[in-house]
Length: 383
Image (cartoon, rainbow, N blue to C red; front, side, top):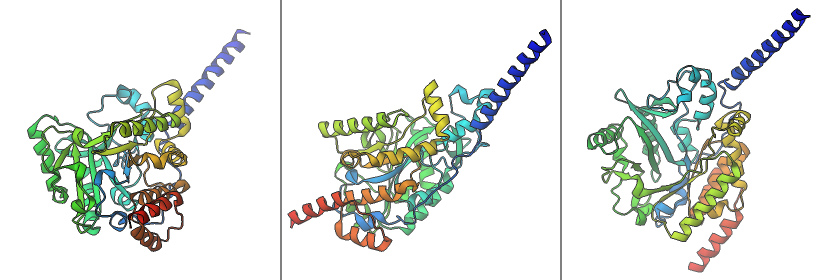
């Protein structure tokens, strides 16, 4: 009798162990997503073909990529040397590496693909380690130099386009150090990015025509958190408004963005680049971890949230206050997201004749009739 009970207990323990091990293996399978749908449209020249020279840069709607260059992160990637999250360290970090990797990859495409998909705002995270500039998000992703080469190649071939390079976080440097700032700007110069900057005396009054010399030049606007910023690199605090909801709840993030837009409208704070952080974030709670496991990866969750975002009746109204739409998985065309968001952006920025030419050229059949109609009425009223 005792032997029978002992065997049952042992079988139960073994079963529980098998379930736990199977669960650990399952959640660590390093597959980011099973499918990627991309647009057939090339949005390489959407700015030069749709934006009027008089349009203020701070009011131009554009698509942004959150943690733009995390696409090279995989199960073999090294942990960011400046990462302080203890769950990623040691044996625990080894046990959950596949799981954390799936929450660290926010974009699956390289710089060239993102830019051709219409992305013009790049949220860049760097670690300066052993005299190399690495892109990162929890783990090191890749060397920034070949990414910068893709950016400059794109700019060389697409006059009239401009990019916002927001160096959101740089680890391994001291933002108050002039020496570190000089190291940073020397990198920008050697990678060819400084050559595309424009002397900006007043960002709030800068027009698209002034920035791009009436669409004949391609440019970058570089922003960092260094305190010793010069004309080539704008200071983050002076140049950008960007607030983070820090939630995995779709409705909460949506309401957060609406409240932020209302605050900008009330306070009349339109003179900066205004970023809509349309992203959800894993929460380190029981329900948050469960939600993350069921979503499988950050990319899969982003695919759903991006579609949810465009279903919001108030979304297009938010663009007046928050015209830079920063998302995870920016180039997905699941549920036609990439085509739909670019359609909305181009309609919002408004240049009806160029817009018509663009749609004819790229065979875009869908039309946001409400915005186009209102823009045409406005145009007629000015005649």
